[in-house]
Amino acid sequence: MLAFLTDADLPAARIAHQGIELAEHAADKDEIGAILAECAFAPEQGGFTAAHSSTLNPCIGDGWIAAGDASMTFDPLSSQGLLHALFTGLAAAEAADSYLSGDLAAPARYQQIMDGIQHAYRRHLAFSYSSEMRWPAAPFWQRRQSIAR
Ligand SMILES: Cc1cc2nc3c(=O)[nH]c(=O)nc-3n(C[C@H](O)[C@H](O)[C@H](O)COP(=O)(O)OP(=O)(O)OC[C@H]3O[C@@H](n4cnc5c(N)ncnc54)[C@H](O)[C@@H]3O)c2cc1C
Image 1 (cartoon, rainbow, N blue to C red):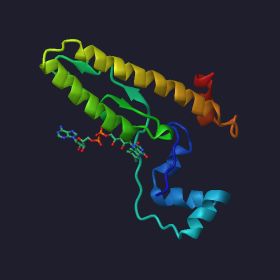
Image 2: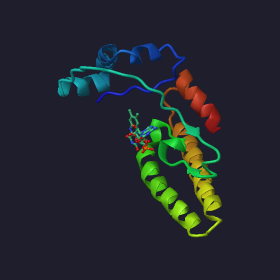
Image 3: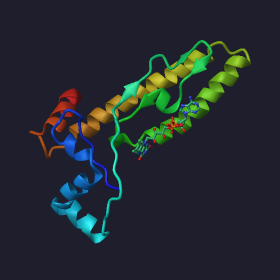
Image 4: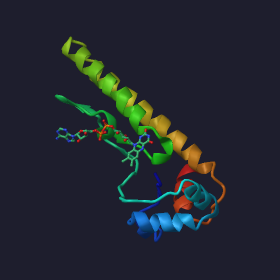
């Protein structure tokens, strides 16, 4: 699988709309081109989707709980979506069970867990983007690194 991450408003986003065009573009790049050639990469189809961070706040209310992507989505750099879905699926079930057993503080505890996840995620994301030094003039990196500072 070949993936290309950018911002929708940048000129490079046009390349991502066509799987074939993306593969041709990548084949021209030294390092990734060599990898694609080695595995005889032949794209059959392509697609694009939004992959930005988002947070639902609050994540719990009267008669409902959000878990997984419904509660938060994460930058692909983090690879956090699946872990979050599994962890918060369990945490949401426990919160519902506790609440239905009479523990009225369970919803607030669930929200606290979610706030902690969001806080740690933002900190790690800022650290990860600020660690990249190779493209200081590229708008994609500038946008993320100005948030990190
Ligand atoms: C291209 C791509 C690559 C990714 N790569 C990674 C990765 O490498 N590592 C990682 O950790 N995460 C990755 N993610 C993110 C990860 O896939 C998601 O964070 C994770 O699947 C979220 O799980 P979820 O159960 O919350 O939601 P989903 O997996 O979206 O499941 C929700 C389910 O609910 C169903 N549904 C929706 N509405 C209704 C309804 N009204 N009634 C009944 N069912 C409904 C949907 O059909 C779906 O099956 C990637 C995502 C994408 C799009």
